[in-house]
Image 1 (tube, rainbow, N blue to C red):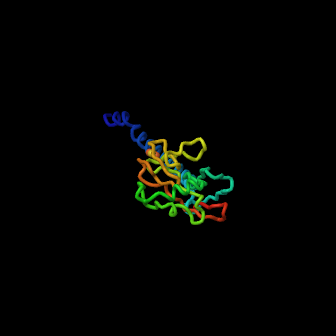
Image 2 (tube, rainbow, N blue to C red; image 1 turned 45 degrees about the vertical axis):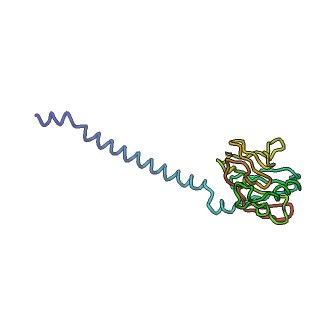
Image 3 (cartoon, rainbow, N blue to C red; image 1 turned 45 degrees about the horizontal axis):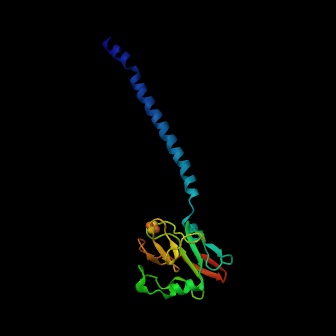
Length: 188
Ligand code: FES
């Protein structure tokens, strides 16, 4: 009697355990299935490395008047394209390496394409903490050196995109680009 009483008190415990286990297996299966469906979807949304590496942008220079600058997007980065005036070019060329915070690629001739001195093309990301400097719109401040002014912490760049006043430590980077004609460049 004692045994049957004990059995009467615990008949369901084995069943509950089995049921819980079955539910757990069923849920795990659902989660694995959901994961298997989600992964190819997410994976298919990522551009392949080849596409990222090859992506390039063509820029028509004809609408950019002397003294003006524009911003184009290349691989998610702002690219500044400035049509420099004769005075801005001379100012950039007259600067000596000893005057620069970052002399690497500091000569103006190293920062423009030969025969195209009037066009400066730089990555528009401040080398301090990554803000986008001002200086492309006519109403923007360009700083004391006539290039770009970073409003985040006051860095200033000259008409060659070189840092002339910190805290930014480096000149604006130069993206890969080439002239396809006198009025068109291809960035990337
Ligand atoms: S991010 Fe440009 S000065 Fe700090």
